[in-house]
Amino acid sequence: MTILRGQTKFLMGIDQVDQLSDWLAKHPNALGVAFVGRSNVGKSSIINTLFGNSVARVSKTPGRTRQVNIFSFLWQAKGDPEPRKFYLFDVPGYGHAEVSKEMAVNWQNLLDTFFNMISGKVLLMSMQDARHPLQEADVVFQDYISQFPLETYLIFNKIDKLKTQSERAQLEKLKPDIFKANKWVRQIFFVSAEKSQGITPLTESMMTFLLKV
Ligand SMILES: Nc1nc2c(ncn2[C@@H]2O[C@H](COP(=O)(O)OP(=O)(O)OP(=O)(O)O)[C@@H](O)[C@H]2O)c(=O)[nH]1
Ligand SMILES: [Mg+2]
Image (cartoon, rainbow, N blue to C red):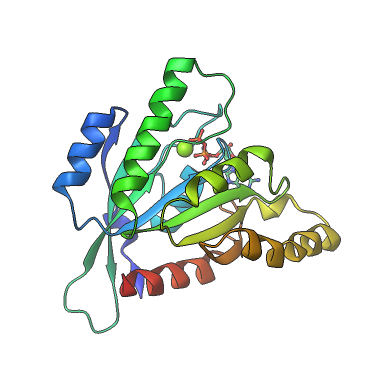
């Protein structure tokens, strides 16, 4: 099973609710994956690592991705005569304080529209910072998202920043409680987008999942 990394395409960035609902209505078969998480957690970075270099823009300043960025990607399973097409959504990050009220309302509306229309068709890749798990903003977001029937993988990124074995062990210990508290979380991964650690199991699991939707 391979993602054809050179074939990932940026289709468009949408920051208007009407435009987003139009796009989603016109693409009822848009199966794929959506990346969510706190601003600066590494959503765009992991998209680049998984789907091809520099397809998504990595921010130097947190909160840069203020729109839903839509990509398509191709993937070929063994024995498939043709590659299959899936969609990829880079969803604007939460937990960024420095936005106007108007922008925050627009962001919430974008998210409501997105999750209402996409549930059942995307695998949600919910990301957290491995150094700071279960921040308040993460818990609030998980609560919000639990109203939608969204199969979720929880991804702890930046594990390259965890220097000691005990830091890693602590993270590992959170797993049972996370599964208990979040009914939609199916699997938990520990990765580094920057150092490409833990990427193979994540890719394989993701593709196996997509085969079944
Ligand atoms: N050490 C380390 N740094 C990372 C890793 N992944 C991302 N970063 C850095 O974290 C910063 C934010 O990365 P982005 O990928 O832009 O994060 P984002 O979640 O897309 O951010 P927004 O679009 O602003 O919501 C960048 O400086 C990245 O280089 C990682 O695995 N390890
Ligand atoms: Mg981003």
